[in-house]
Image 1 (spheres, rainbow, N blue to C red):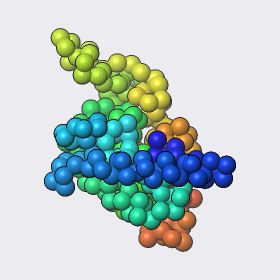
Image 2: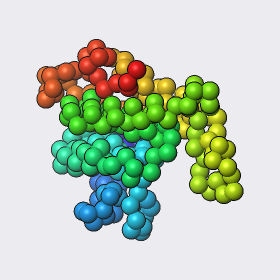
Image 3: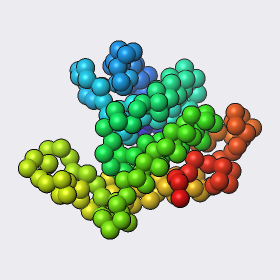
Image 4: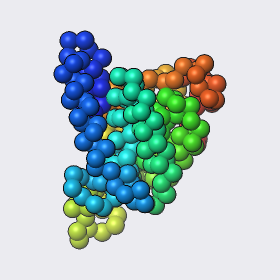
Length: 232
């Protein structure tokens, strides 16, 4: 909702109403922060006290990308600083504590890699580039030749695992959010100089930072070899 309202604020005909709703939504999310010593900044659901997985659909990476998109839409630097801090915390989280078990966009390694790539392109912060490369490498590690589609299969939700043998816990899935198509799009976004605007459907399409403003001096039109990329 925060990302959607941020985009809505760029439309003159709805901006006043959208901005009021946006301010309230951001304040609501900020009030749900977990204690500083927690593994994640935000819980899984409202009222929960346990930490959350790292993903686009749940957790700090999704909150951060929505907040940065909204911040850029309305020119709020305080929100932008907060979004970057949340994303840096997510980038530094130990992989074994992220609850990532497969490669999909929604809650897998490719989704995290794509979000961190977007943050790198939007800020020039090298820690995001490192995190993107790391998660793309982990995405390739999830590939099992001869299994699924191009070696990628989706891990079944926990509720479907009872009594199932280990080899039956992954399913063939070609789709966008949890399947091989989404994995392929994230990888293409990492090695191509063309901005991956397909992620507007995920409300992740943060505009890249102009090259003159980037701390690393590289612009969004840099050749693929200068961008976060998966290991070939």
